[in-house]
Image (cartoon, rainbow, N blue to C red; front, side, top):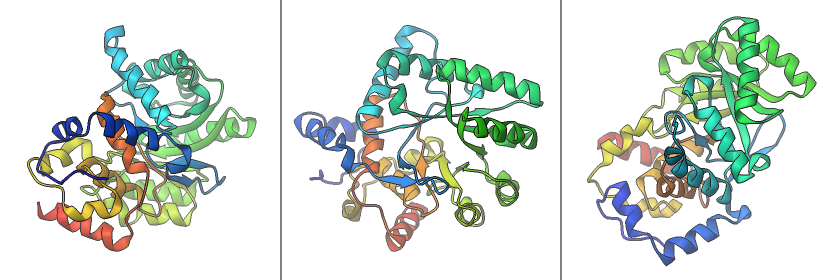
Length: 307
């Protein structure tokens, strides 16, 4: 059941669906079998297609500031989420995520992904060890070289750690289209499990070369900036959600944007960040139901381009 598509902002729409109907929908979403998953090509391990980023949102200090994040993380796990992405570059985000996961007792339900962001072998090892401590884990699910910083050095370390079981998967990341060619070269020459890259209906450059290379090399893709850093909401502010969005179960712009991202055959998981439970619930609804096929994806892209 979907509400009428009216020109309302995200916050007003979410308020409109509050109450018994929203609770029932959340209950349905929490059922494990309703959550869409995609497999990591190298292992066939399945991950929910909607994850959670921590850039800016988890970089907080006081207990009062942490309280809403605890609610976000609790809801994320209860709705079937698992991929939690962070970085030492994100200030206190790793520590906050690790502390809250411990308080909630959800470590075993999370797929922890973080990064190394420094030059030099020894410095990289120290930084990664600190990430283990901050996230309160003895084994990292995914360790990524952030923005390709000294990637050859760190990948050598990470391959050793993967062999010993200290990390399960290794990868590289970037967040700008200008780095896509270099990322593609690294993907073509290195033995990797994951690549993380910016991809959204507003930032489609990855479709040209990077995503095809990832697919060819059997490398899983985490999509950062799936909402274009929030810019997409500014683009659609005051505009009605098209009626045909209901054909793929979308009742909000966020759901439409995220379903576009995770429906790309090469994309494994999108990692939108939020500090608001209502936004988290909205995002997670993009991870259930029907994903758009090629014709619908193009319809979405053309519609957004015309706004």
